[in-house]
Image 1 (tube, helix red, strand yellow):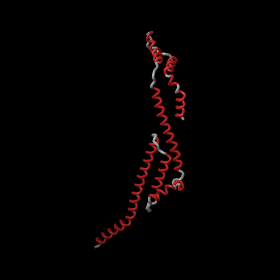
Image 2 (cartoon, helix red, strand yellow; image 1 turned 180 degrees about the horizontal axis):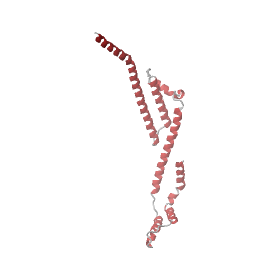
Image 3 (cartoon, one colour; image 1 turned 90 degrees about the vertical axis):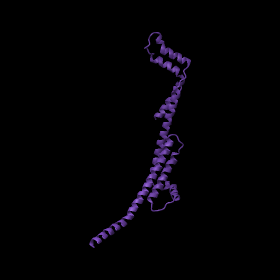
Image 4 (cartoon, one colour; image 1 turned 60 degrees about the vertical axis):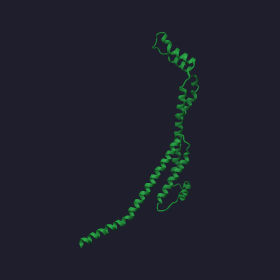
Length: 204
């Protein structure tokens, strides 16, 4: 009999513990699920924003300021929903909150500062990479020189006249070589001032 009561007491105790902890366990499960959904959603939003930034960097028609504003609005909506999980919050309500994000300033001055820094960084990066692309194109076009008859004659004289005298290993002097090159690259030489300005601008 004592063993039976002992077993029943054990069972009653376990049931009581199970019932008492059920609400707590359910709360943890619910919170875990909501946070997991929130964080994955946040990562998805961040990925979307990064993709937009990448599109801007590669020359896409993206409004950086609008994209960053949208990011902070979505973040506010997710945070508000998570922190008020005991309520049913409609999309209209969230949209209303997003409209007043500038007045509410839930993230303080962080969005404004980050927006300014990110915008400056991306504008500079995109401008620089576009500048490099222009430089590559110019260098490629300039390298395709159409040699004139006078240029070919001057080159032949400079490079092969020593052969006639049996001086195969003799190289032309520097000034002579430069003069011939200037004659052959006369059209390209006109680009020199602009090219120097371009290089200076890229180094700033």
